[in-house]
Amino acid sequence: MNQVEKPQVWILDNNKNTSHTYQQALDDSFDFKEFSNINDFREYYLNTLRSNKSRIPDFIISELYLDDGCMIDLFRDPNFPKNTHSQFFIVSQEKDPSIIENCLKFGASDFFAKPVALPVLQAKLNFALQEKIKLEKQDVPVLKANTLTFYKNDSFVTTLTPKEIRIFSILHEAKGDTVTRDQIVSTVWNNKKTCNKSFDVHLFNLRKKLWALDIEVDFVPPNSYRLEKGCALII
Image (cartoon, rainbow, N blue to C red; front, side, top):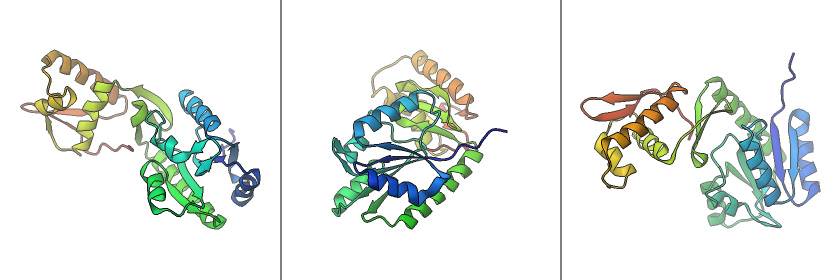
């Protein structure tokens, strides 16, 4: 019988005593990994994603300011994938509402003011973990928008090209309503003339990839498309 893997918590903090405090408060029901700077964390995190997310962390608890930078700058980096199953919790003595708002705006799941009420942190992690388990049981596909990659139950499924992701985004944002062929072409190709064949090829390839996720793009006569009703995605 395979041993059940514990949820992973990655901790970014210059102070090892703080990291140990988190670990003691969250007890041995979690596995922990520690980082003392943003660069080491970023490199390790990206390598984990590239390896088909074999052990991506469930939670990341980070000090807002570390020796080599601020987590907001990492969140704002367009090359850093924020839309994953990992939830970021920022911890800081910062009291400026605009900075706290930016943390939440650019990718943090929550913000904790120091001194952290550890029972509250533990309760929020446990609740978020239960919600994550519920979603996984629903077998819901997940689109990692920054990497143009689909995952399902944390397993790599397919990668979309830039044109495919734009077509998909238009259909997804329509929330089940129809979008005409001309609307899609005009948006994706920025009103530039394109032959019908080019659009047809991109749409064919997109449909083929989405089919692997049990998602269908319906054709609605005379010249419109829509994502099938009930298509559930975490974006």
